[in-house]
Length: 592
Image 1: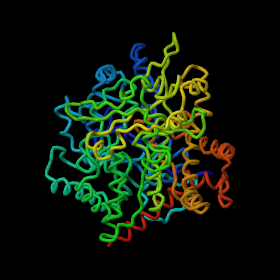
Image 2: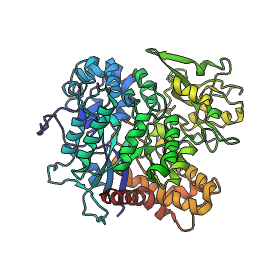
Image 3: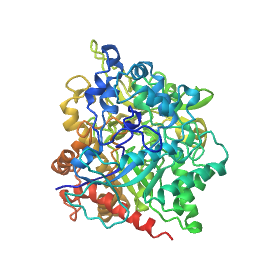
Image 4: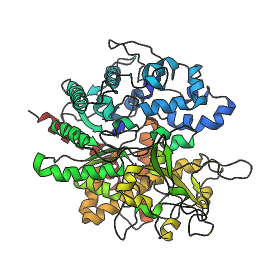
């Protein structure tokens, strides 16, 4: 029987927005994360008009599932469960869409997403959004996660490596905190010493209660963490679905002095900074900080990125495919996609990006800066770190296009018509935003490559349409062919990069140590059609075993002799993550 691990999974996130059924000692209302929500409970709230605008968001982002019941019944034996207090940006996003918020207000989602609970988190209006104590939400999450279900099942804390799972064992959990704001009590506090004191005091309270905190994300989708590190833009899917996400666009500048101080505090407790959600410049400066501080402070811990996709290119490596090569501009308006725009006085640069692909087959990467450049992958690999591969279709490089039913023209703006320098070439694109401060620090963001051949190698609209027999929506072809290959392409890319680093030995390490599943399931993601929730993980692994080697043959690539496909699957889906957690528990438990 196969076992499963996940480095970033959210069994309790959406339950935070549900109607309370219990009131624990903390006084915060909760619902049971063992309950699996039926997608129909979301969809029944949508009238025909709203369905047109919101159905994709409801069917994918809200329907992504990983309840404790699903995890237990599908043989997840170990997971890094994510503790998360919904940040200000996400709460404002929900409120910003009138159609969606009206459904919440009118009780259209029943007990699943209610105005009373939403207002208890967000306040009654935007002026109240900083009043919630995020750490109280984290404590409530923990109280909830360790309750029994109706049949007296419960999950267990893993506290050391003395764990050899059997089919009868329950899910064992260690933890991550997604965003430093989650460890704060007062989000209006501005004194750096007080902020550091709140974070370390709250973190220590978790650690002394034997909640093994493996990692903490420094940034998230909210400017409140900019005092530590600037965020990468993470909301293009919401923008496409009609949400006003302007306030989620990055405005900060790199990795800050306060961020360095907090990271040292984390390292002193053997808690790892998680680089996911940090901007490219913040990540680059973080790696430089580690190198600089290595001799002085003994920072020899691995780097982790818990739920990631790859850009498929370098940020800036001479002679190689670089980020700038995939910036798309219109043939007739070459600077239109590079204009600086103002958001309440904060300037960002909007960048339209083509999707780099290995072949002209419609399968491409998302080159947005939230994803890992080759420089990131190399840094994580050399640190003996861990990369959790996200199961979010947009992160892995797929962007759905909604077509007009009359003339088949694209209704969404993720298409670039007549790309620069190329006659009648139309590309499927992603949108990124770069803060003005980081634009000045990284001039490459404002350039356009002259290598039109690399733009020509991106995913073309015509090829994309050919792969969608029903005109661009979800289809059997998407589920069975397109989405699995986005996942396979990431593993192939990591193998090829490892081969350049150190040949077959490095490829063995990449497959047998570095990569794992970091799905982000039950977060607000667009799950893969072939694995939209935790019940499909076994089927997804079997598909990988059956198809991956034949996929590699298309590129004249083979698995290392020491790692047959069954073993690669076991390593990716369970053993790499398990061994990484064991090593981190050893480090934590060795502290005086």
